[in-house]
Length: 99
Image (cartoon, rainbow, N blue to C red; front, side, top):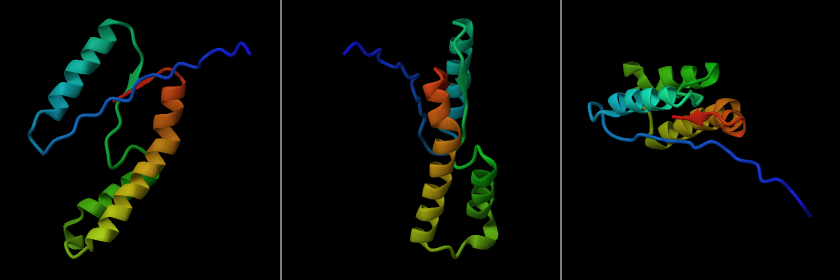
């Protein structure tokens, strides 16, 4: 069978604690991609979609200090699932680099 291989764009993540330079690196990468006329999309986590942003607000709300660690983990996972389905996978399939 002669099937064309579908190319997907890369998913690039920057991980680290607050103040470690993630935003700076994202800005530098974005500039590099722009100079090469490559399409890209920046997504923050948790967040990025209407549902994920609501979950983000729950996670960051100081009133929720007593949140159980397992509850927090499931909320992060739910936000990640939503942004993955709604934004990341379609973008990658469309040849858009996701940061």
